[in-house]
Length: 433
Image 1: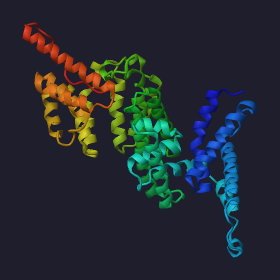
Image 2: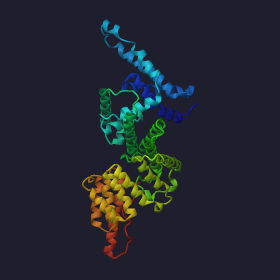
Image 3: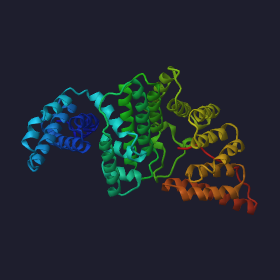
């Protein structure tokens, strides 16, 4: 008899393929989702008694198809029939639909499903929400927690996204080489957004955050299996693995942020790190530089350093410069400034940071980094103002607590100076978690 954990994992892994296949059958997101949900409920009832099927995906597809057809027939009984002339001209719609399903390649179906969620007509927030709901199967309540909105608001957001997809008439054909390349970039971006939502989610639900990261990694593995020669997909998966390998050490028991240099590196997931390092080494051999590869190379330098003081900060600063030239962004410049502060000192880093105030004035990390640099060079009053602004912009209690720690330290140093007590020099800005 299979245990509950195995059944849950199997259903989670098979869900995207089943939804995608039934979407091609029913041509309706809601109908496909409801059919798979019904099939999953039946699996939870029958699999513990009868054992798992040899092909869980095929089982879910066939059971879901039958359940969906039954639902359609029940609804049709309540609908007035059209004129006989119209009925006589109808083809065998059910036979055509069955042929679409029975000839399906589940691999392509999952890719199509990802492409639908990344439709350019959808705003980015709707893309992520729809992907989490349709591809990942998270509940509306879970997704609402991620976005810090109410369940009803999130339900409306997902409903609007589905309506836009239906109105757009998204084709289900496998894309050509050029179109595939364009869509792959969108799908990869969607997956990294899902991962980032989990990695930096404002909710305090650590289990939900971890589930988002793991789901993004699972889908990235699937995408890489579909396109195993794409170096940017290797870089994307490597980046996720190397970042998620630190998950157990990024916060303490009270939920406060633990910065990278203070984390217990013996608790990092070495299996994930080894896989990530192998992937980025393989990607680099293609000599087709991309943003995900550069970011994963930065993460690899952190992972390879046995101690924080062993980190190759000059190389990290150079990699951030290459990333900045490839994808100009004030956030990338801010990250480069942190590396520059370690490699060249706080003054050089502060010169970079001061150019970003207009574009990053509402960004928590900008004020935190700026405050740390100002504190390191002894400009306490300005550092205090920057930290106060950072606290006002903090999205989690852990972020706010970390900044308050620096403020408390500033107050203590000021008091010590006033009383003539010597104190250690400030350590300044630190790298992130």
